[in-house]
Length: 165
Image 1 (cartoon, rainbow, N blue to C red):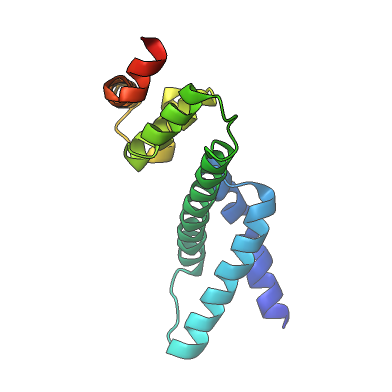
Image 2: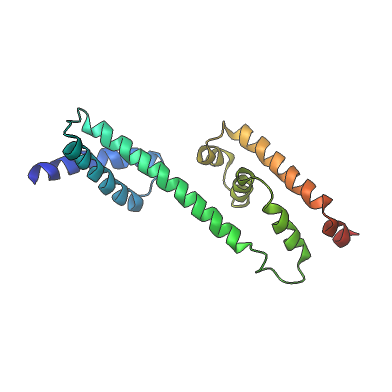
């Protein structure tokens, strides 16, 4: 039992430091580290293999689990954002909101994410890292494309012509 405790505490600080650089909070790290450590123990027990570099293996498991969790959080966050803009919650007379929501659902999920992040004042660098794009310029270009696409779809809608004459 003492060996497990030593192994657990030996890599804890360095793994937390690495995951902080990846944007993981301490709260989430606790669960990820427990799960990663359990995976390491199960791997050694079930496979009967000795892991030569348990530190590296454990950190890679933590990173993998964090990326998986981060993706789940982003999807959940975007879902909540879309629920907040659900057209059933809009005022009955708010035709502009209805028009926006109608076409919002038609643009690509990537465009939805980019425009949502911009609406929350995320920097281009942060959006680039979050969506794994090739830098701030790529994000800026994509954002302009997405806005133009959404604007074009809205302007082609007969309801837009009815609202704006």
